[in-house]
Every structure is written in C-alpha cells, then in structure tokens.
Length: 293
Image 1 (cartoon, rainbow, N blue to C red):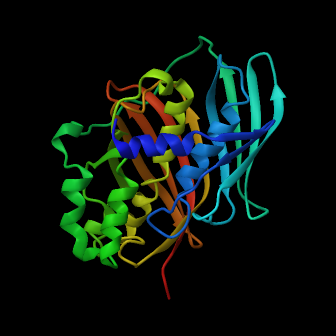
Image 2: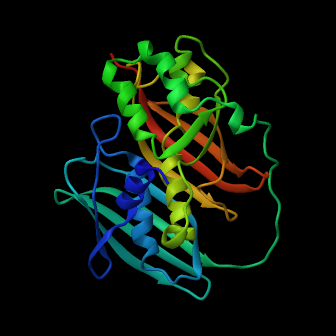
C-alpha cells in the first residue's frame, strides 16, 4: 500500500465525538478548497457507521452548498431517518465554522436476490496499456496556469492510479470533441486486513467519482478547464447508485458523457464497470461551468 493511500484512508477514518456526530480532517485539493469527493466520501463513512453491518449502501444523493475550508476540520452530524426491515436511510450534514457546507442522503439495504440485467460494458483498451498520471501529466505542463498545478495534480491523485483512455480536456483545449470521456482507476495499493470492508470500497469509489465526471462537458466545447484557466467550475450536486459488489483496489472503468450544458451549468452522466464487465455503479453530477469574463 502506498503512503498516499494510507493518508487517504486516515482521512476517511472519522473520529466519533458523540452519538451520531463525527469529525473529519480536511486538506486542500488542487484548487484552494476541500475536494468535493473527500466531503462526500467522509459523509458516507459517517452514515455507514450508524448502520447495521449486514446492510450495504445502494444509493446516495448530495448537494455541495459552500466551498470547504481545507484549514479546518469538518463535523458530520447523522440523522437516523428510517430503520426498516430491508432498508435504512440516513441524512448527513457537514458543518464548518458553524454553517452547513454539504448535505447527503444515503440508503442502505440488506442483500436480496431479484431481477438482474444491465447495459453491456463499452469497449476500452486494457488499463496496463495506458500511461500513468506520472507519465502523462508532465507532457502538458505548459498548458497549465502555473508551475504548481502539475505538482498539486500529482499529489491529489497519488492515492489513486487513474489512467485516461483518451486525452484529457486540457490536452486538446481549443478543439471540440464528442462529449465522452473514459478513465480506468483503482487505488494505488491493495486493501486488506482491517481496512478491507465493503463500505470502504464504496467510499473510495465515491471519492474518485468527483475527479473527472465533468470532463465530458469541457470536451464538447474545447475547454481545458480550471487547469488552463478557460473555465471556472465547481460541483453542485451528486448522485450515485451502487448496483453490484466491486473492489476499489481492482480496475474499474469510468465511462462518462455529457447530455447537456446550459445556464452556467453542465451535466455529467457515467457508469462504472468492473474489469470483467459487471455494471457496478451509476453516477450523475451537475456542476457550475462558467467561462471567465
């Protein structure tokens, strides 16, 4: 396990400070605010720690309200909305400096057998044939707004082995492309022992899901994003459905596309598949996508 992954696991290991109240540390993302995927993953950890062990997360719906302060801890309060025979529902509010910065609702379910079908996995090259972040990102350092962007990007993604199937938006800024993006990802190290828990795999996938989902919006307009300075953006809301078991330390294909952008907002839709073709997760996110004036 890499040191970066250990640090991420420490970040997700919340401190219980009272019944249904937890505290998490925060750190700066590539931009000077808390990474949205971190807040979503920590909130799901908090919710999951109040749920019986035989119930598994099957969906979450979240709103990002205020940019998080990376210099302050985040307090997560959990409301036990419902405990039914099959389903458990939790609501989580993340608070910093006395005000809510994030809301999450999550639902958990006992295992059941039932109808089963899925859309087939799209074609994609094997992840081992694609360059790592360390190999790919330095090629485009001249596209970034300053020298620190490359360093912060590499640091932010050190815990995750994330490989682009096609060139990312900042590599082809100025040329519009089909609004579709694919990346393979897995944690940078195996999860075993005490950390090998189903909830943690789900929380790690939640963390990664906020990294690239709006790339397809940028591709449709030939924009490079915040790293090139031609777009200002932030996540607004985020929804995930967890369909089938998966492991975050094994390759997952993140197939992303954008059906619409308007009104200063862009919508991303995605499906996450295991390497053997099982549809594991569906994701939808809307974000602010503004062109600086």
